[in-house]
Length: 216
Ligand SMILES: Cc1cc2nc3c(=O)[nH]c(=O)nc-3n(C[C@H](O)[C@H](O)[C@H](O)COP(=O)(O)O)c2cc1C
Image 1 (cartoon, rainbow, N blue to C red):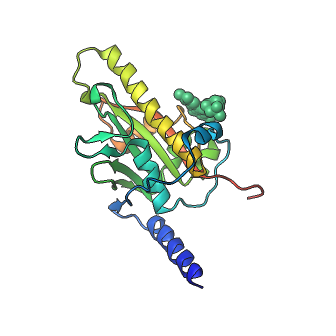
Image 2: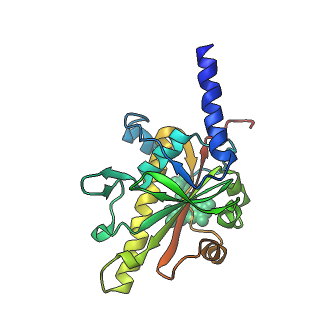
Image 3: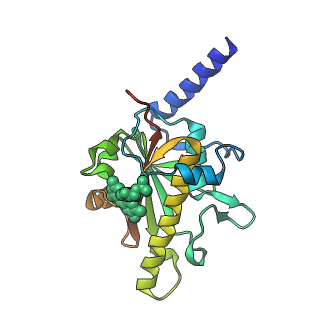
């Protein structure tokens, strides 16, 4: 009976999270001892070819974002993903059914950018992507590189985003989630939607869902 009530309240929390467009979503502290070993996660990592539509729970979303590019050394403000000259140029925009949020690593929270479902702009011509309840969009703001060499800066931006994307892939493999790193998306539509500055470059996106069970 107790288990039943825990299940109900957890499901209510998940539904609450995705039922309304909150201005801020406060994430849970990361659970440090979850998941498989790194070697097991590496053996499981694969780009998903299908996504489940079930909403992602708040703890999984919290851990996913922390693993992707959260702060792991608060005293120095440094992150789970390295970045060239510690520019910390990669921001994560989180697309869910109710809106688009930006991940605030310092506060470990999500701030609303715009309401409504815009996942189709990321899916573009790969319609199966819209099934994923969460899509993480990696945007590099190259103005954070205080360095005078434009071609080098674009290489660093791509490398930094690639590392964040790989953090996502390894976390997902370890936690039983499905993801796929993707270059393709509707870049013009997303630039307009998110009102990006010229210095903000759309690098990669990672749709994320629970692993699709056979027959669902
Ligand atoms: C930089 C990069 C961009 C990618 N872009 C896309 C994409 O736009 N659409 C897609 O379906 N897969 C994309 N992929 C996934 C690759 O197709 C996939 O990694 C490759 O087929 C190898 O499969 P695996 O990841 O399961 O090993 C991309 C992968 C990388 C690393």
